[in-house]
Image (cartoon, rainbow, N blue to C red; front, side, top):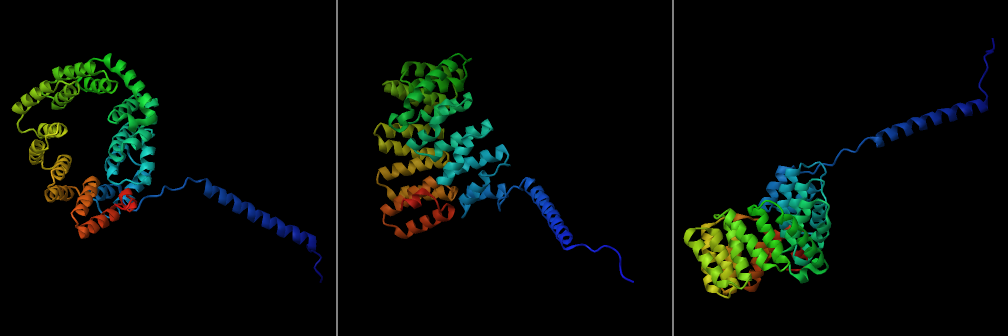
Length: 360
């Protein structure tokens, strides 16, 4: 018996097929949009924060790359970011500069302030002015003050176009700090700002206030001595330094300051004695040892200078400043094999180091 149920026509079959295809496409589109609307999972660096920090501090191969990876994260706790910023000056590169600028604009004030400190150690004079200069007009007063104080260490030539802006910022903060109840910190800051604008008498007065507030604060006492020297009161400065040393004969800080003072006054041989004493009293202070190495080199004691720099690298393998200077001294003395070893180690730490790019 023939089947009397209606059979789909050719046009009906086409409509059915098209409808099915449309349904599949709609389902696929909905699935795709659902997937793409989900937030992408953050990319995690291959090494953890703690591992990276350890590698950076120890100057291990690949330290720069891992350090940059961690600083590029957007889920890093502020205290961890601050710790990494402290290591960044040993790993300069265009990428390091880019990351540093991002931290200066960080939503956390503590991170931005740490980035200012990192910039001071990372960048030479003119470059520091270019990076920190825009912060002289920052909305946050603490950030503006820190940038102002950081830039006071630069010469007018290094400041370039930011010289006038720095003077204006210094004058504004002079007024603000002078109105605050005196503390050692704000009087010392006030002294630096007055010195920047050439108000040397006011600078000395502010620093004398700081010393009166804390007679045993050696940093305040040394700042006053430095200002006296700038004010052409060298005899009084020398007398105060002598009194401090009599009271604190085993202070590495004072011995180092005396060495720098003697060096700046053309007494290199006596400066060497004080710098050596400072390095002896504070054997782990690599900055003191570095200054001792430079003084030894000035007095043409090249081998002794190299030994001091080698000791720094033994204490702190990541210390780029000491490594670069040791490469220079080794080259001067014709130790080409040692130069190659030091350069290879530097390249392993940070292949984008400017010293390598410049053919140090």
